Image (tube, rainbow, N blue to C red):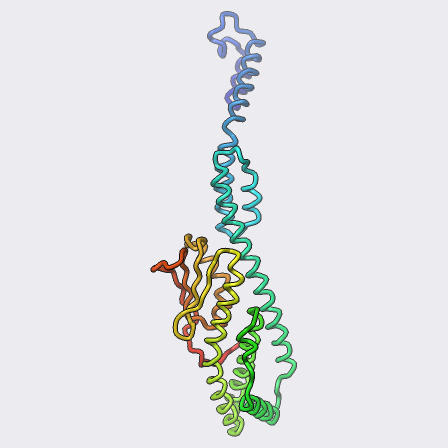
Length: 300
């Protein structure tokens, strides 16, 4: 377009420099040839521009998906119509973006509920801080007596949500906080009570954490079913959690998914998460998560 414009200016000044083939070059002829060339160029651009645009859209959408901007990627991909040669490739990217977006939204909902529940419990804990040694002793004695009488944890074993499971872990954290604070005291009687409570809490955690991990895997399995992702816990104490689905054929998807759930897997003390993209695959990609033991006191 720029070259044509320059040719027009030169032709209007000296027509013979542009219309060398014409016996009688005139400014009118220069203008008419310039107009014809512009029309032809516009038609040519109209023919080739959709293919270029589609390639650009696919490239842009791929980058947006990598950045986690799934909504914008979907908006861009939906611009490619059925008659386009790149329509099939665009639909594949749409399915990928839809799946990742749905998983991200569900994980955010779970995280928000978890944060709200933990905040509520933390507020309760903060409002009942034990100030004096005598109050600490009374609290420790009550907890020890409560454990000795027997606490029913079975309701958590059949929990239908991750939030319900976390309530038990928060209880462990409450005990852990009491024990750690008591161990800092110079009062020998208080330290002895802390030692008794710690002995009981450790036994409970060793028994309960495997059951919590097993139930977490069941809940995750139900939630991930609609995304064609299978989930199950394995290994001694159910310390390994396994995810299987076609979406995990791509390493980027594995990393994104792990980043989203790493915190909650750490809370349940899974030692390893494993990813396969089809059932019975011998090889898998794994992440190491919690390196401690179930007997370690829970610190919230």
